[in-house]
Image 1 (cartoon, rainbow, N blue to C red):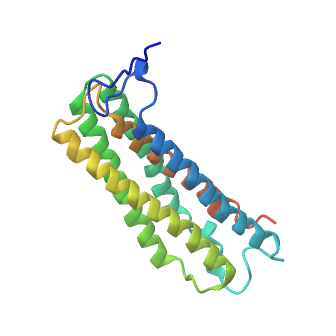
Image 2: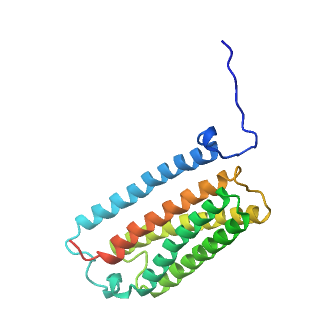
Image 3: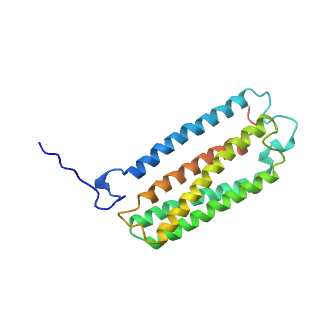
Length: 205
């Protein structure tokens, strides 16, 4: 019985008949590992919070970050919008619209950079640091690691934008765009959870 090996006509090609590509599969597996990483951080946060008699701890009025929610809310909104523009870029290249891909990825990249700058500025306005007890430690650990992941996403988007402008993607060759979009959506979802925990319900016991 002969076995017939079917290869992609184009390296990194994307098509329903070919099943999931190695690039996208690799990104899915990577995201799964990141889910477990953040699950560990969230578990540590809930453990600290559950064992604290008062949360946020007393002694620093700035621990009540919900009182200064304007900037975090703005950058959160921008990050959510960036997830939509990123997906618009994916839909564009699926239809062979390279200009639409470039336009939407560029907007996504700019919004990601603004988020990082906004988060960095917010750090300078908080009134507490990483060394300020369990609240400071958990807050900066959670948001800091997320910020590092956003930075990684910004770098990925920069590469996608460069390759898009060079015309290296098409309707049948855009696995990298799909993979990076999955990562960016993951980063977005993680921040929504973080924002809800740290800013919207910080005083719940």
